[in-house]
Image (tube, rainbow, N blue to C red):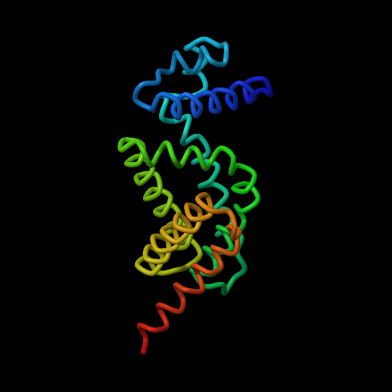
Length: 189
């Protein structure tokens, strides 16, 4: 994608988020988003297959980054520590995107169809993480349990950080994984 197209894409995302917050997702059209940026509706659809994808644009990059981090983790690192390492690798990107991510989360949470899509994409991402763990030799059931639990923890830490950045994202992730390990240790006794 050319630099000018990247710029248009970012402007469309910002305009969409503004309009979704002003009017609501359902009352905003792709044509209105395009008009706010000063481009045609056709340009909008060259950038995004539909207006939902304005909010879910980075999912493929997120998946690639997480699975690559899992694949690059040191041998012998357990599944939960591998996931924590992968999630922590995203911290700089997530922190840089916080000004977009917080209102994005608000729009998604207020729109049932978008929230449902978010849940589906989160489940698909957990499946990709499980597959990446299996590729490292983790048994299937253990990989699935670790990925789904880890993904739930990642979402909880991220949402709580978006709501209140007082405690950093990295600290929230670390705390969540420590609590998860403590919970698992309690169940062994």
